[in-house]
Length: 337
Ligand code: NAD
Image (cartoon, rainbow, N blue to C red):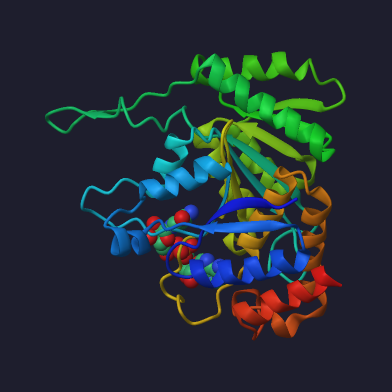
């Protein structure tokens, strides 16, 4: 049976990496149909709107979207399109896997850590950020709710069960931020009791950063609040060689948007050398989400094999002399085999 997904190629290198990704998905034969939608500068040029209603409607209709990077114009009062999408669809879980791949420059091998970040509350509220009239005192609010903490922690545990993960670490700063991250930690402790098959531990955020750098093998799944998750997920991306291989999944009750973590890379747009792997890994996560776990696993393995055996096809950012097209084709050949 065919499933239609919304596809947003996006700006800069977006259309190039999206073409390569859809080519691979077709070769994987996962029965997906694509409903293309515009967002970002391309939508502003075509429709006079960075995020047209038709695009929101398509995401709402299909419930799943694969999205290229979007450029938000600097200044001019534009709100980030990604933040708008997150708010509009209440995409409360930001899931960021960091996996080691062969042939990439990184400090460690065999890293496989998933950060599950709360994406709608915490320190990133639009309201409650004030600056006194004399400009001397800046204030911002951190607000965590039981409802918000419960749904993110439960999401992390359910994901761990589904993916066969063994351990969850709740990251907090409840020793200092006693109320806000204290509430999150208490909720995590309560929910952990319902999942005795998953090992649970808790760690203060500053120690977590040190432990991640020194002994990353002790981590499996990390669940944490918005600001800590933002920082820790990038730290984890750094452990496996940067953003070129970092997918980001934005999950809500009614919609899910899968994307690469990197941006539209205007410096290399149109040159045909953008690395499509982060978007391909996001597509693999999307296949898991759609219940096609075997296909997702096959796609990740094909990327791994291509990086090991087809070094000529790999893009320059990973040390190869290839192009977006040659890299995509090499992966497509492997998934079709
Ligand atoms: P960037 O991630 O676009 O680029 C940073 C550096 O990484 C550049 O040198 C770029 O060439 C390189 N790079 C990024 N992706 C690559 C890939 N797939 N293959 C090879 N090299 C790659 O970050 P930036 O320059 O700070 O941002 C550019 C634009 O992207 C901005 O308008 C920003 O708002 C937007 N952005 C969008 C998203 C998103 O839509 N999710 C995320 C981050 C930034």
